[in-house]
Image (cartoon, rainbow, N blue to C red; front, side, top):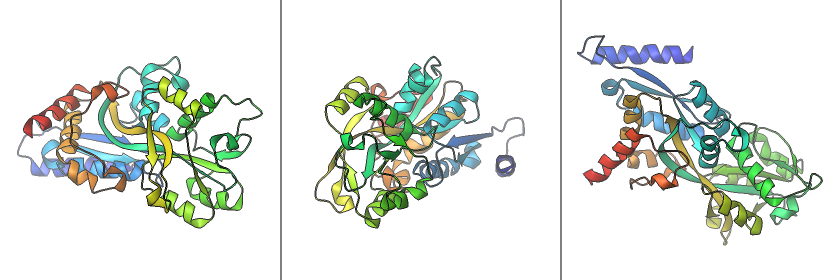
Length: 320
């Protein structure tokens, strides 16, 4: 119903503003899959739609940010046509495009990249007696809901560490809003999130009780990064959380994605609106502050860059 009402509203605005005949007017409603409402993807998706919708009268393209369980769900929703665009972790996108992991036997070769957004680091918050990855053996950990990118990333880490069934941590599912209290009470021993920094959520957890930011490094992680080109090393800035030392980790990139079959006019509107208004987009959420208008390197993307997005990016570079 919400989508229907937005569509009708958008059509009324377009019809009122354009002198063209009804047959000549282009209009399109694009749903953008994000993540849970209390995560980062949802407000970032809202920021993207705000930018795209500024050109609604001239373009006829309306963007609607939709809450979803996360990256894995978003991939399948793109594949089925439920979503037109989605925010996806680069590791999940790589697995989907190549038919690996949870997508084994079902490669999504029509998946296309539109715009890389912000880096996201694996962030493990643990109780004070846990100091390194090996200490998580046999412990209770929250790694995000089924269908989330964080759980997919955890699966990669767990495989790399080579734990036996007896050593494997027990996954405890809960709402993200419950995690901080569960850590402080000892109901769980650690939580893993994949997110951009600075993060108010991480700050709130660390302020609530004695907890550690766990270093995610070592030979097993080095081997994982060597085998998975979409993972890159990074450091969680300790100064943002009251520590003098940065915390080594690794991470992925959040990427705006679509499909090869998406109407090129719609992809063009998304790509041109966002690449031409990078500065405005950066101001809409702290994790987007590192965005730049530099040319996109197709080699670093987990799926091919949509040709219309490549054209928009090239035109922006030529205009400088």
